Image 1 (cartoon, rainbow, N blue to C red):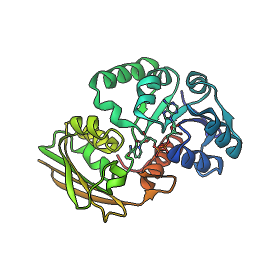
Image 2 (image 1 turned 120 degrees about the vertical axis):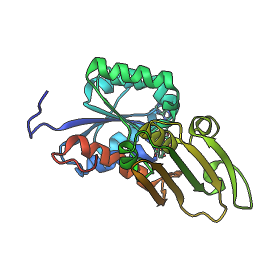
Image 3 (image 1 turned 90 degrees about the vertical axis):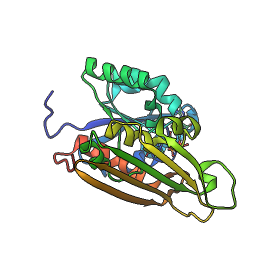
Image 4 (image 1 turned 45 degrees about the horizontal axis):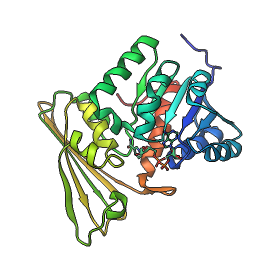
Length: 260
Ligand SMILES: NC(=O)c1ccc[n+]([C@@H]2O[C@H](COP(=O)([O-])OP(=O)(O)OC[C@H]3O[C@@H](n4cnc5c(N)ncnc54)[C@H](O)[C@@H]3O)[C@@H](O)[C@H]2O)c1
């Protein structure tokens, strides 16, 4: 359907934590042209009530009601929320998904793709905390792709006094061992169309979450380094990830789209 300029996209948010709160507050302040916050939902009802009150939006009682009432649902909850709700959301609305690590399950990915095709919706995976996803999408068929992530031991949920590699292997395995920290490895793998190599390093001196992406193919080489400030409300997530989520909504709602 072609929407006129005066149509405002209704956005629903699943997960009222650090990223969901950031996106909801920015939408409520009118910072995304062509989009408005319709409502929010969280498995902890009080969190949803409180954010809805603050943003003068609705607290939805269940995900399906939210998806039916919205054009776009933003998932900023968890891998479990993706497994439980993504299909039902895609039967009604476009889905902007932050917990992309869940998509390393190829069967789930296939089901969601089919659902979106059948219902004319779309699964949108923001670049999140990683820069360079645009290049990865263009570089499909690359020979080699490696993502090195350096975080403080606390944000990896481990303890160590020295800087050390805690994981080296394919993204699919990293997703099982560090499910909360591996969304960007999953997003990068999906973008380039291969199970990329992942190196995770714990550094007690790390103040920022750093991601270094290196890709090689017939096109040449790409090397990108993002040094992200932790997100204030959840140091395990990055400021850039929340901003990327908002940018993904802008790409849908605004008249001009930049990047591939
Ligand atoms: N793609 C990326 O680059 C990237 C970057 C950072 C975080 N993330 C992911 O985004 C998600 C949100 O991150 P955050 O920092 O806002 O986390 P958070 O812990 O601050 O907030 C998550 C919220 O979701 C709610 N929730 C969890 N499971 C739910 C479910 N099944 N149904 C309804 N609500 C549920 C929680 O109660 C909480 O309020 C996480 O899965 C995180 O791993 C992705």
